Image 1 (tube, one colour):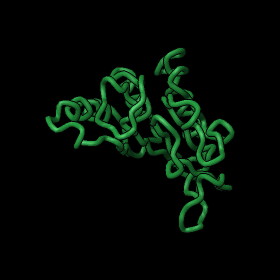
Image 2: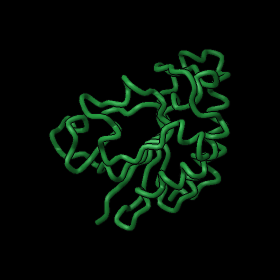
Image 3: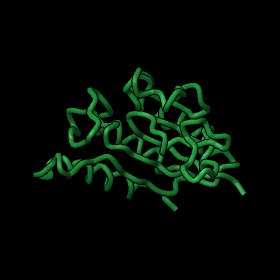
Length: 177
């Protein structure tokens, strides 16, 4: 039986989103069992908060086997290349499929301020569309989850609409199975 993988498009690493067979101290499950996903089966795309947020407890995200494609790399090489790099570890033959996790705070703060952790910069709607569409079109894609959007910070729904449009624009074009 192969393993499952995860691609995370979020602004900063979080202990609950990183997992490995020999867990780093930061990724141990609360029930004492091993994490469900190995570090080498995880790709992190678009994070941009350097310094205080690229550590989980004492472990730096770049000291793990997680594939990291930060925002400057997305901008330098383009969204298509970021997708290719992210798909590498999650589409290996020993991986049964992957799940895409989108934290909305990966988006540019000027475009999506309805999040609890605000930080300048971030992906544009176009970059997010290209990345998510590329990931979800891959044959191993199993699903998409979206988190971190705070509707209390968007009382009129003006920010929820473009987020909804993003999701509807990438999911129908995908081959999620």
